[in-house]
Length: 278
Image (cartoon, rainbow, N blue to C red):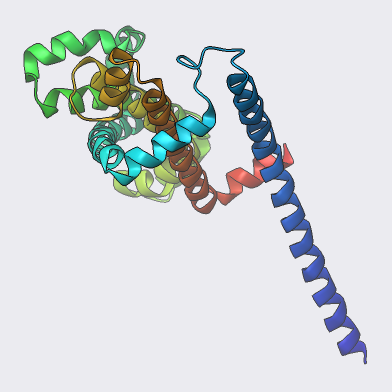
């Protein structure tokens, strides 16, 4: 009987935990969704009553119709394909270089002293202002666009990776050295896991920067891509197409950030637990 009672209490506890998790999830969803629904309802009503210009602020229903149209005829998919190719290509190239250099600068003082003044000098420069120089060097093709996105993704990853290594307690390096660990072992067992939370933060920032630079580059020089779609919509005053492109960019950014948050919780669960306690 005692065993049955304990088993029943355990099942009740699990049910209570599941119910609490579902309730918290619903509260979180409502907190994000309800304000958006209210905003779009007000926008729809105000636009329908012509209290605002329908040209510049078309009703959300018209924007959704346009969004459905460009999805069905393949226009949006084509623009999205080019934007994602440029964004992911630049993100992986710039992010990988920034990661390796950032970890090295955080670990090796001589390299940090050598490279940090250059980073401090070039990081504040607006990345879009480098586009003319990149065009001169790499030409008008896809290479120059990917190089620009790589530059945008490089600095956030570099700075966060370097900061992640520098915040590691030096005692861990001393303990590893006293146990005879090689430099490769110190990198794999101390540097990389110790800086992983900051690296993942750098990944999110680099991804957001890559999206931003991709759109800007396509607006300046591009016939295909979401940025080109926005610019063409502005030139022809097809504002519903402009809003459709903006919504697509927002959804892509949201999905990528939520995916990275999920990965971060799996890779560094201790960091998430510390954030909850703090």
